[in-house]
Image 1 (tube, rainbow, N blue to C red):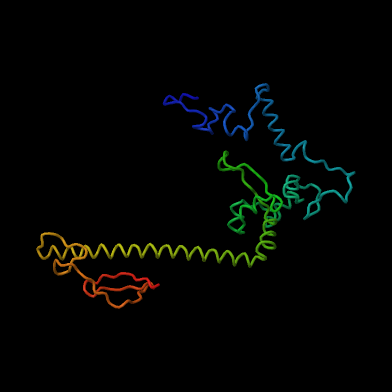
Image 2: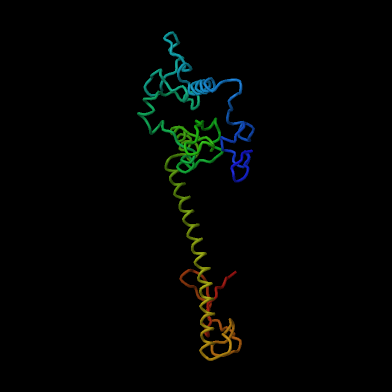
Length: 267
């Protein structure tokens, strides 16, 4: 509990405030807390060591021995170099060196989860399957408390999308165009529906205003109401004409006396 001089706040109120964190919050399981029996310097050294071990760098980089069997030694799949990226080899099961990653970005660039879904039309279950599409997890650069980014290898994503899911790049393009056309069609249908609804409301309001003006022009004591005759106070009975089809493709009927139009559905 923290006194903010304007009230008391607990960890549940602001779980991301580090000044109020005591290691007992709901997120303490994902974020390591410094043990009380070690100093800050030792804790920092331990974190650096874990980072090097995770990235297979420094003293944790796999050694390259000249005594190793050349037939079993892992080499770059492009240039044959033995200085491969061991993190990629472990995560993506792809032996490639850093110079080749920069030399061939069309094959070894990393794609985000959003790019895989939008550009290659892949689904969440497919992207979460490590056996199908392995991914590299990295902290989110926008918000540290968001979920980690899922990065996929481009040539692996293209191989699965082109050769297994869609069959070819042309089939993927055709499916993308079909979905875009369907999205455009639904958008236009929604717009036409709103436009027709607006026309109905506008016609009704215009009819009421015209009747009100007609009633006031004859010196009546009350304004005309919906259903009154145009030239008098009797109830107006519509005399519908023949049903015709308008420019929007809707079947409408028009009153020959007042000019009111209504839509007619044919079943």
